[in-house]
Length: 492
Image 1 (spheres, rainbow, N blue to C red):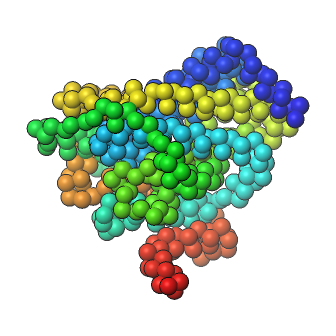
Image 2 (image 1 turned 45 degrees about the vertical axis):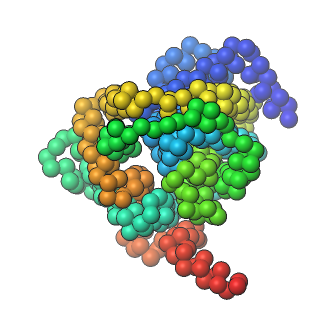
């Protein structure tokens, strides 16, 4: 208790609190801009923290990390342009709500869900970090492979009306993920002699193209249609009944996001996708998903922000970064003279509590920013589309180039936009393709590593109870509809 009080007292300095607020504002802004991620912002912030004391420096970076994850939901909801990869799932139901004039309600739900997920994971991080870190250590390549396969099993139900179309789109995503040099064998695949393809196709340009450019091209077909938006509805925040309606999705996503965040390298994007899928799986109103379901916002937003606190567990307790952003925070800790891992928790526990306190404060600050700014942000939906969409095009170009400082990424984004437009016209959802692209890399890399470890004997994977558990969950996920129908028939 003394260590906790000492750690929290380190945050009592007004200068540190101001830096936390600044970190939140930067995080929300960067997160909302397409193509700019919190990891990029933290990396740019790193040189400026050298002259700061360790606690203010890490507190500011951790605050930016939390707020950046939430910030991506703003543009995802308003203009179907996820500012950050974890917000891709939020766009599936957030944007339809904005289209029907309920942007404020969607933004308010995203803000509150994000804070609940963030606070839950921080409480878990505070009290059970050592135990959860030990569980994360049990995951080897074969366990990660089984987890990724379980994620791919969700493709059939993640969005859209046709499971077959979803599986086809997901398969295309997995195929795109194989472009480039295979890390294990060094073989080039589908590069066609183009040097830029040797490192693979960047995820962010594809994401921006599919969602932002695809939607822009789709909207261009209806420029002569006049939408009547009621301002009082657009800026209306969620009611108490709305929060009660999504409580199940929020609770499930708290656990999903925290667990996924603890697993090194899994990250907030995978957590958001799983949070969305489980919200849909257990919802009584599955038909509303993809059309503007509040659970479709609460599920992924709770999960991706819960993953931020979860990712700090292996970062601080083991010295193993739980995400790209925490890898940069890990570098900052080392730069300031700390040794992340068991020694950090044992020798300077007050510093760990200070990081916990900073992230807790950051969650409450971006709750104020999210709810207070929801009415202001929601007015974006009232901007004429002849002005809004050209601006989206410009930001998409800038975001695609800024990610890798490459004009080739801009061409990838434009090509993905055309692909996204064609997919929308023929009833294919972009989300399964994105999910296939993300999880395809995890499947391939971990399968290759597992085969090396297991002497190319795939049946040895079944020696792991964790693998067996995930495979059982995969089978249940794939055949959930007939299983549920059978159980329902048996009860009646």
